[in-house]
Length: 161
Image (cartoon, rainbow, N blue to C red; front, side, top):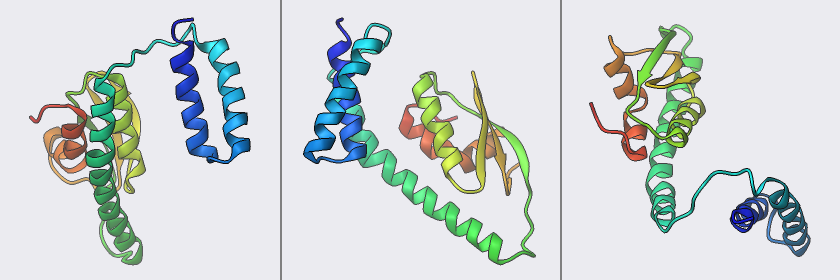
């Protein structure tokens, strides 16, 4: 019962952010969040602390702008490759090593790689992410990491190699 209220707040906030702030959405979201939090509240395993506020601010104002910048660059590169069919490509499946230990950080890293055109995360392993890369650059895993994930990982809490 201890986690029912935080679960309700998280579910309701997500609902309102997705559905909108109209009276019907707020009320319906509250009802759905209440029912779900009563059902799953005892099974969730998370803890909220004051540090979540700093982490959220850092994510919104630092990580997202870096991600958008990398996204624009990747889109321009892929558009150039599509419009220039004679441009050589070097498709390869590579393993990107990671120093991230937090599962959520690894999830964000893998999703960021997948959402960036030209790369697709295939699998997340204990010590890395398996990625299909349309135009692989570099000779080894540290080169791959530098090109694909280093800026993301630095912001997510991984140490540079």
